[in-house]
Image (cartoon, rainbow, N blue to C red):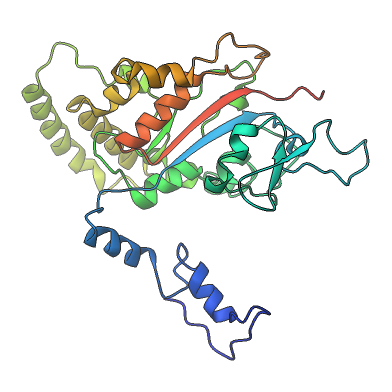
Amino acid sequence: MLSIKGQASRFCDGVSRRGFLKIGGLSCGAGAFTLADLMRVEAAQGNSNSHKALINVFLAGGPPHQDMWEIKTQAPSEIRGDFKPIKTNVPGIEICEVFPRIAGLMDKAAVIRSVVGCHGGHDGFQCMTGWSRNSMKNLGGRPSIGSAVAKLEGPVDPSVPPNIGLAKPTSHAPWAEMGQPGFLGSAHAVFKPDGQDMKNMTLNGITLDRLQNRRRLLAEIDSMRRDIDITGAMQGMDAFEQRAMDVLTSSKLVDALDLSKEDPKVVERYGDGKPYKYQYDGAPTCNEQLLMARRLVEAGARVVSLSYGRWDSHG
């Protein structure tokens, strides 16, 4: 725990700076109430299996904030957008008139108006890491938030990868990127359930008993090479093999991706996003992925990333 020495000066509201750090130090370990304390409270309440999760919806190209969450009513006409602000259910917060339903749910949302890009481009990478591609490039690059969470927190359920990417392929490839593991290595790469990763998870004419025997044999062979492998590649192979075994012996991941198991009324409420208007070189407005993301989180995923739509209109 971090101790802060010296006189504790006070803000105008009477809260000391030291007290503020204790209040705000939940996630960084700077205060009296740490993440470990939170887990103890959850365990005492019977919630030890709960987990917080992130669904990262990347809007390729970026819709203009002055037409969404930050209506610049006092700005000159060439800066402000064409829309008017409306009140929300939180006093003092106004958003664009085209979001009346979100306005009614604003007490459940947090609008962060201080976010800026790390460089002039608007591909998915900086939205997954917060850094440019060249940052720590000599060490493998910065890891995405999904890879970082997978490394720090690990899986909630062994059969569900903690870091999952659902993005469909796009003509402009950077808009389908779901983040790289960077210097953390391939063991923490994003799992893509609609690509080669999923094909490798299928048992072809082999029983689970034979599969377990093969795994034990492979483990014995790998142990002879482990202590001489300093590149991290062996760790990555081990992680992929472990992931495959867990998925093969459990249907939890497959069930989460199978929308036929969802309430038809819920599926209808999400919609399918078709027809995919204005897609061009961007991602389809695939509403099924939003529902899959929710189901994956419920199954145990920690971070689910997807790309939705194409917002690079310059209009």
